[in-house]
Structures are given as C-alpha cells and as structure tokens.
Length: 143
Image (tube, rainbow, N blue to C red):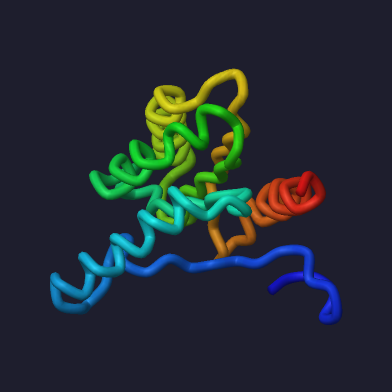
C-alpha cells in the first residue's frame, strides 16, 4: 500500500511466475495461471509496470505478457509503464537503440486510447526516477 497510512491511495502487486524464478516448472506454471487470471479479471487494475533489462530488450516472456494484456492496453482501461532497467550498463547510443526497439514493439499494441510510457531507468544513477514518479502519481490521481 502506498499513501497515507490511514487511507492508502494505491496498492502495488508484484506478480510471481513472470521472468526468472528458481522453482519447479509446475510451480511456475501455477503462478503464471494466477498472474493471467489477475491481469484478465482484476477490474480495479489500473496500471501495469513492465520491467525489462535494457541490455536484453523485450524478451519472449515480455511479448507474451503484451499479447495477453493487449486488449486492456488497447482500449485504455489499463495504463502501462515500460521500464528499461540497468540503463547505466549501456552506452547512451545503445540505450537509445533499446528505447527505439521497445517503442517499435509497443506501437503494435497501442492505440489512440492507450496510455503507455517508456522510460530508460537506472536505480544506480537515479535515471528515470522522476519520470516514473510523475507517471505513477498521475495514474493514482486518475482513479
């Protein structure tokens, strides 16, 4: 929960089963089903934050997630923030290339009704933190 202790105005959920997890395949598959149900059914879901390593770009798992949430992103019922993490590990030209490629992929899912943002992010250097704060604060205010 985020916000005032007596009246939080946002709740963040870290969904298991997405990306790397050192667990048995059957456990990961159960988690993926829980995540799929959450993303499809949860009506008060406002925003999805997708973290992708800038060095790797959007992976097969990221594409699968985008395919799954495309209807909700496309109709504007759910906002999306894509963070290309570890931007400090790449030279600026490669960060720009990663942003361009991610934007190309995201364009396939976005419509005029969509609210999708893409940010190069580095916790180490503080890069993108202000952009993320602005996006999330605006997302909370719209609810």
